[in-house]
Length: 311
Image (cartoon, rainbow, N blue to C red; front, side):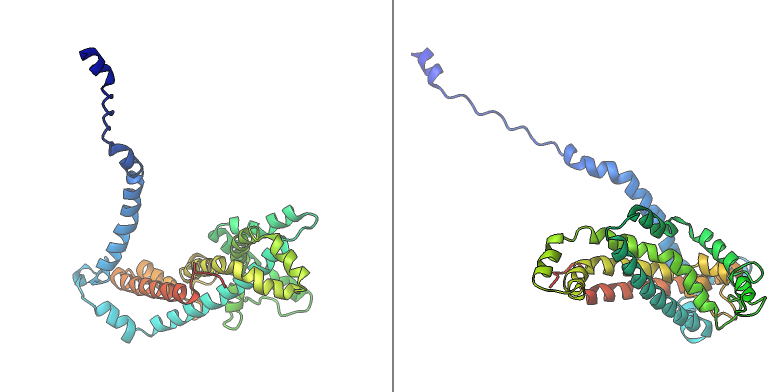
């Protein structure tokens, strides 16, 4: 009987092993060193800028160093006319550059998205300027704009203009010259992002539109543009931030001249800190630029409804 009862007794359920917390924490442990390094390299400079913006800090005049409160900000908005001039030019530079780069980049993306002989070579030529560094781009265009060996020399040989003309030293031509130089490198950025998004558009949509009698313009308006909305919003936002912070090209081409005509706010910050050694005031200007970019980015994303439903 005891043996029969032992046989009839159901086996005990297996013990549930306690889930170890290590596998769940392992991904976070693996990325922790990189995250800490990034936090250090990003957080420390940002905190330092905010700290020095409230200080009078000039290494060449240590007897004047000390806590300044909001004096640097008050001076920027009320006692520094150059600040408003550089801020106005920065807005003008960003609007013109980003608008033209988007227009030409969209046109190039639509062209190289078509099927034609030598398309791979054409794409490589279109995208190649983006692989060139900003300093090298500046050096190339400095040579092209050189009054003795550049474009103006060959134009003068053809009877257009005069010898010795420098577009970078003339207040009436320096802005268009700088715009063209930056367009050469900025247009491929838009072309790359827009072309990547164009590749994902289903051809069935265009075929259905053709069957319904939709023209190319209507297909572009009702199919292509809605599909490219998020890519355009993101690329324009990124490029606007980069153009606002553009220093290398303008510094190499014009140095902010002539007569301060091409001085952006970041270039003014660089001159204030590096040349004048006024790091406290330069930090205050940097903080103002940061707040402006943050506010404009939030408003732009809000108005554009980035990531929302496409109707």
